[in-house]
Structure formats: C-alpha cells, structure tokens
Image (cartoon, rainbow, N blue to C red; front, side, top):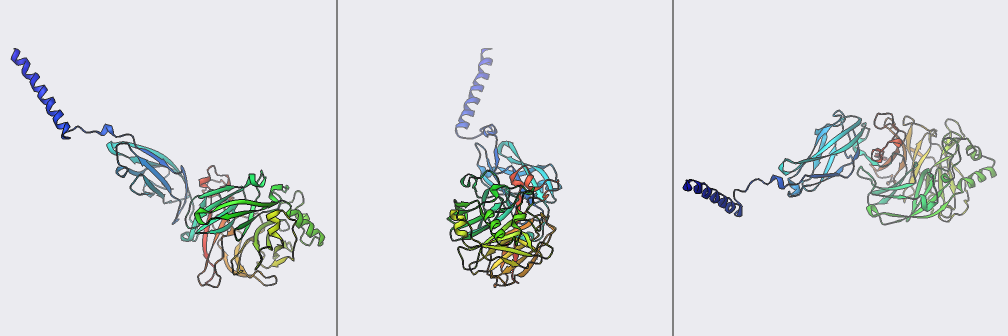
Amino acid sequence: MLHQLVLPHRRTVAAAGGALALAALGLGAPAHAASYGTPTITLSAGYLSGAVGATADPVVTVTVGQSGADASALGVAASASSKSSVAATGDVTVTGTGATRQLRVAAHARGYTDLTIKVTGLGGKTATKSLHYAASAAVQNAADTRYLTGSSDISAAVDVGGGYVVVADDESNTLRLHDRSSSGGAVRTWDVSSKLGVSKEIDIEGAARVGNTIYWTGSLGNSKDGAYKSDRNTVFTTTVSGSGAATQLTVGGKYKKLRDDLVAWDKANGNRYGFAAGTADGEAPKQIDGFNIEGLEFAPGSTTTAYLGFRAPLVPPKGGGKALLVPVTNFDKVAGSGTKATIGTPVELDLGGLSIRDIRKNSADQYLIVAGSWAADDNSDPYALYSWDGIAGHAPQKRLDLPTTDPGGWEAVVDVPDLNTPGARAQLITDAGSADLYGDGTEAKDLDHDEWKKSRATWFTVNG
C-alpha cells in the first residue's frame, strides 16, 4: 500500500519538473492570449463630410495600438453602416500599416450615415469608434473641385504662396489657412474679433494683398433685416509673415467710418448713387438700389488706391444696370491707420446686368471679376467671370459663364494667372451657407458640426 501511494506522487513531481524545464527553454509554453491588452482606436475627427463622385475628399487619421502587440499586426476596417445607401462598409478604405492609418469614404448618395470603425488586435480582441459621415451630391467639374471644410460661407480669399490660401467668411470673424490642393479643414485659424474690438460679425466680403499686407473689408451694409450694425462698418489689415503652411497673420490697423465717408461723399455729389437711401434704417442691403460691398482690389500700378466693388446698387438701379467700382485713393492709410477716406472718380462696368461679387488682379494688372446677381439669391441665378485691364472706360470681357446647378454662389477668386497663357486656370470658391448640402432641409451655416460645413473650390480654365 505504501508503494502504491508513493509512485503516483513521483510521477506528478517528474511531470511538473519537466514542464518547468520546457518553460525555461521556451518550449511547449501555454498560449499567452491573455497577455494582450484591449486594442485602442482614436479618430482625428468624429465627423466627416464627403461628396458623391469626389476625387479628393477629406480623410480621417486613425490611430491604433494594443499592449503586447506590434501595431502593424492590427487590422482596421469599417464593420457597420447605419445607411448603406449613402456609404457602405465596402466604401471605406483604410491605408497604412503602422499605428497611424488614413481612412477615406466613397459616397454613393447624398445623406448621412454612422460608420463603425473597428480595430482587430491579437488574441481576437477588438475595439470600435463611430464616424458620423455626411455626403453632399455630385457636382460639375468634380475632378477640379476641392472642399474647404469648417465654414460654408467663404466670401473672400487671398493666395499666400506655397499652395495655400487665407479665406474669410461672412458669418464669423475668423480667418482660415487652407491647402488649396486638397479637401479638408483649416491648418491654422485666427479670430480677429478681440484685436479689432468687435463683438458681432464684420461680414467680411473683400480682400486684397499688397506686399506683406492684406487689406480686408466688411460689407459696410445693413443687416438683412435693414438694421445698422456698426461692426460691419469695418476695414482692417493683417500682416503676413512666412508662406504656405507656415503662414502667420498679425492684425494691424483698422477703420470704422468708411461707410460714413462714402455716404457723405455721395451726398456732396448730388446723391448720384443713392448711398444715403441705401443705408437708411430698414433698408436691406441686397436690393438693386441697396448698399453692399463685396469686392476689394488695388488700381493698376497702385499701392494706395483701391477699388471698392459693389454688389448693390446697380447703376442705374434697374435691370441691365452697370456694376459700380468706387476708388478710395488713400485706402492704405484708411485701413492701415484710420485716416478719413478720399474718394476718386467712380467706374461703371457693363457686366451684362450683373454686379461685383469679387475682383482680383495679378502683378501684370490683369483683373478677373466674379459677376453675380445683386439679389439675396440662390445658386440658380446667373454668374459669370470677366477679365478687365483696370482702366476706367475700358470694357471688361466675358471669359465664361459659371455653372449654377450646384449648391452655393460664386464669391471669391483666389488669384489671377497670366491671362495670355493658353490653358491658364483660376480657382474660384463658393459661399454655400444657404445651401441644403445633405438633403435634410438644413442650411449649411446652421449645421450642428463645423466639419460638415464646407465651401467648394473649383479650378476653371480662363483662357482657351
């Protein structure tokens, strides 16, 4: 009996010893799945906007990890879609193999869907994040279109070199720096409110650059309800340092009486343009006889005289009227140091009954004018692009009619190429603030998430 009890004990001890020996040699060790942690996944943005048929939509950066595992061993993919007709799991592409991946979505239809993004780690462990995706409809010139997200109301733009542009919108006092060649959000922003001592929107509508100074102007008009808003009567400057993605802006001078100077000048000249009536209490700015400035650019060869381009009034204020430019001969001092404006001889341009929505020139004094309706219009009204030499009495020439079937009105031209070069192209930007981008009846400016707000930037051939 004693022998029968001792033998099993010896076998147990021997087996245990053998297992320890194998473990020490790294052989026959049990699976260590339990040593892997739960994977982690983060998205650079929880909200993303795309467009049907787009070729360069914004992307989301996905960062993954798992303790005990190399990031290259982790898989990332979409595992569910709340509305596959907008974008299904197979429409989500994830590229990259390390801890950081790039996620793209190809939209099928306009609307919204929530996408579940799943990371699968070692040991069968997983984690998920939700991406709230919105898709706008397909547009014309899709291959030449980019979407600048974060704002839907872009109204002025200035090239700052290196493929980057600074834009303003008429719903905030924030200037934004964007990569012109790719869709996505701003790489840098500047809220100029506190520096300018304003608390409401300036309604920034025009901009022009001379050297390292960018000049900006508000609309100078009443609100849409006809009320005077003092902050809209603001012009100001910013100083540019650096270029491209490294661009920095510093607020310089300001002036808040230019509208008053223009009204006084018009009164002294027989109320020729009706500025006093157009700015009267209760008068909406976007009427054929209203008062609303949307363009700003310097005269040929000048760093002091700037043209103010009027959306309203037309001259005379009836169908077929001409567009109005009013030169301020000391604009550098007006915006730069608050000097009272001196007004030059106005210029009236035949733009086929349209008014000025933007005006921009190049170093050779070749101008492009974005022409559109004076009305508070939708995108169905006509738009056209004109060239001009900047000289009073010389007629502008129509370069092309701009497409109007897609959301948004054309509001800004970034820069002007050499218009004598065959195939020369210019990039124009829309204000889409009043557009229903996603088919739910919500105007873009009222969307809950800035990532879903966007303006469309499109390249057009302007010669040939």
